Image 1: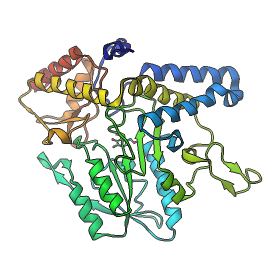
Image 2: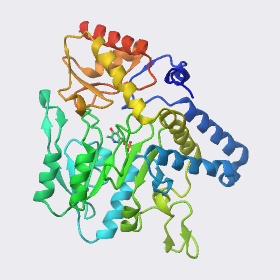
Image 3: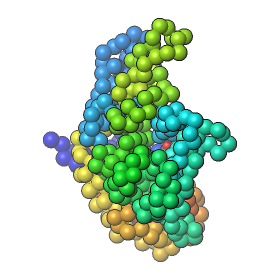
Image 4: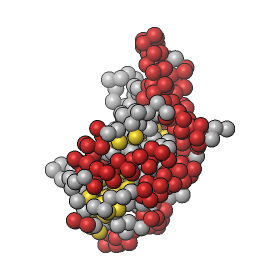
Length: 393
Ligand SMILES: Cc1ncc(COP(=O)(O)O)c(C=O)c1O
């Protein structure tokens, strides 16, 4: 059994301090190796690679690893290119089921666009009508938080709402949603509960059943450490049975007569949301990083380590002109958002030159997103670099 220190040593090759895990995270070594391996197969075998059991096995392993991570059956897992793409097909599935009705959805006003565009199409006849939950603003009118109570009120006032879709963690302030409480509210009203977990999956535990979610999705290239163009989608069997058919053809779909015949039976299980010809390099890369990192360590241990590193970082910071976002400790997750009295974009650019990589500022916040693989020394160094930079402005 590898200790956390052994596993951290696999990141020794990094010459930078990678604290941008809520933006583009570092591609992990198992992901890189799996992608290289699949690409080599494709190079050697050409189109025959698609028939190669090893490459098809990558799809199976991907679903198994995410089944383990989300405590669910591999059947409920789909590989999708992005959150935006996965949710678009979820939205299309709901729309085609209720057509010609225009369904209502409750959304937080400051949601990430990938969780807004798939639903709302104000200039089109096809789409959902949004009921906006405004939430509370923070310092300088920056987005801060919302309450479960506000969603409850929106649902009580608009009984036609059939979907609630929220991020598990807000990309700007770093506010963590009480998913279990909100999921219960949705369950009690027979409302589909959809969770965009791009800002938490890979950094803390998540069990769709426990939070009463019918759909959960997350980008592969953030906290999970996978490649761009990769994401995961969980759907419950009840949800899939209800929508019947998304817009995708999917691998293993049964064409009735020929490809030109529009009649077909969608691919079984979670495959119904997938591309008919998937990129096995991306699938095996995302599967491998989850196997060798999240599932090898355990999501609860990863979150414990991130919290410990955050404490080290916050204790070490010595920057008077920097204020941590006004959230309670249990409302915070992997993103530490700060209000600074200078342009945060310039801070990020200057620190990148010194080897500290922070994500692009969002919502007026300077953000720091530490991951489990960083060492105490790197975290202290990050705090020192940031303090020195802010003292100089
Ligand atoms: C909450 C949230 N959802 C989704 C994404 C990414 O979406 P996509 O996978 O569609 O690029 C981000 C990226 O910052 C995000 O913060």
